[in-house]
Amino acid sequence: MYYKLIMETGHVGAGKSLERVRYFQGGDILSVFEKAHHTPRVKKKERRRGIPFIQQVSRLEYEKGLRRF
Image (cartoon, rainbow, N blue to C red; front, side, top):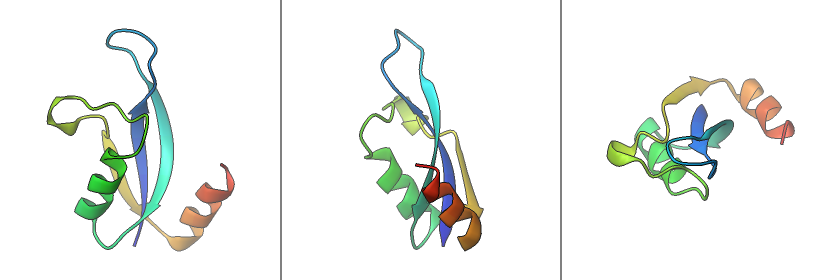
C-alpha cells in the first residue's frame, strides 16, 4: 500500500515549521505513521502531531511523487 503524508519539519523558530509532502510504502497506515514519525527533521510534537495528514494513494501517484524529489 502507498501513502501520501504531510509532515511538519524544520527549525524556523519557536512554534513555526515547514510542511513537506512525502510518499511512503507500507503494510498499513499505522506502520507508515511510525516509520514517518522517526524520519529525520519531523517535528516531535506532543501526541505526535508532527504528521497532520496521511492519505492512501495509488501506485501511479506514489511513483510520480517519488520522481519529484
